[in-house]
Length: 299
Image 1: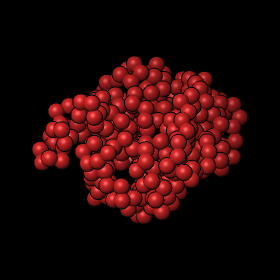
Image 2 (image 1 turned 90 degrees about the horizontal axis):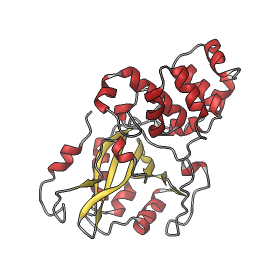
Image 3 (image 1 turned 120 degrees about the vertical axis):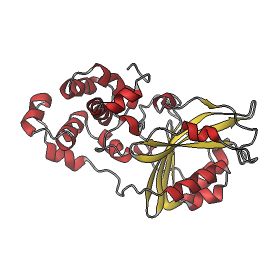
């Protein structure tokens, strides 16, 4: 493996390698860096040391500023920030991988983060952790680990409505799917928004889509959560190009959190193309869309 170029089939077939990538991802908050470290590390000890020598914590916009009250206003953008990244389910194990849990881990100092991960996920005894990290108060570290409340639900009908609403650019239908206190954030923009109505105002004002057919949503899975790769129609040639990857948090109240990642380098990591070719000028003209089925990731 090298950067974002990796043998996905080999990783899926090797739970040890997948576990090492997941460990590095929990440490770093970056799937790109996690792949790089796991490719050269021979053990969790080596990987942990390398992760501790890497850059600072990965953040989400909600870590940097209060919610914006002006969805129609100019959006603030900071490309120099180390932003949190999602991880494809095909590279992730099943432990402590939810996006909001990863974000909460990133808020811990690096050695506390490592101690919590090694103790609570990898099952290391305290003496072994002390040998690697030095003295760390794991109980105190765990007390600082405060992930957002709520749990993930599988709601395929809601996700179908969500995809249709975006593809039809039906903003009122989109708003209906979000909870009253839902959050929408989109690194590298630092502006983030709370509440279904504000989310609708944001999409109406800033989304480059103009009408039905401008967006195509391809279902993917990230962080063991529902997600979509969004392709936006380029009006100059009518081709849908990679636009963003959205990761959703669902509860019985609906969608309570959406993170839209604008980093297009994530598309190869999710085994997705940069553009969708072969579409009719308007995919809502009744023509079949076999390419969507072809682009579904393997379960």
